Amino acid sequence: MNNEEKVEAKNEEETTVKSDVEEKIRKQIEKKQEKKERMGFYRIGEYLKEEHKWENWLFLGVSIIVLLLGLLILNGSLVVREDFPLIGANPTLFAGILVGIAGLGILYALYPFFKPAFPEFKKITWLTLPKFAANSIRVFLFLIIFTGLFILYDTLMAELFMLIFR
Image (cartoon, rainbow, N blue to C red):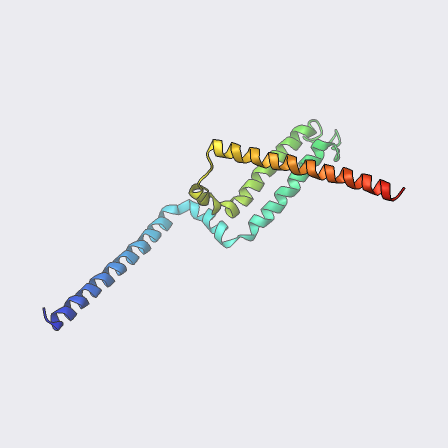
């Protein structure tokens, strides 16, 4: 094989690789367009998530306020008059419904923020139960020993100060 044939073969190979890459890109673009067409009604949800991100923050704030109102009613800090329509007869039921709806609202508002973390959980290598138990026991023993040391030091320092300041 002479140099001209080598150059020609190399050019053909580059052209083939280039056309393969262009074909892959074209197929990816077609798949995206097909997906958009298939989405139909669901495009509204996609639009709201992409174009109106601040609404999630607003929805989260409203959900937290509703949750607090429900908890205040359940706690008894916020009293509902008995003659108030629909709510006055059963304020605890109404408060429970408020807390439930607000909880779901908070989960819905926070879901887009935590969504990227879910695939990462699959990549984690979790401890086996025996290793987890062994590590937990070590941590609790460490806490007990240091708690005992701090109590001992506190007692010794208190006695020392009592001797000094008498």
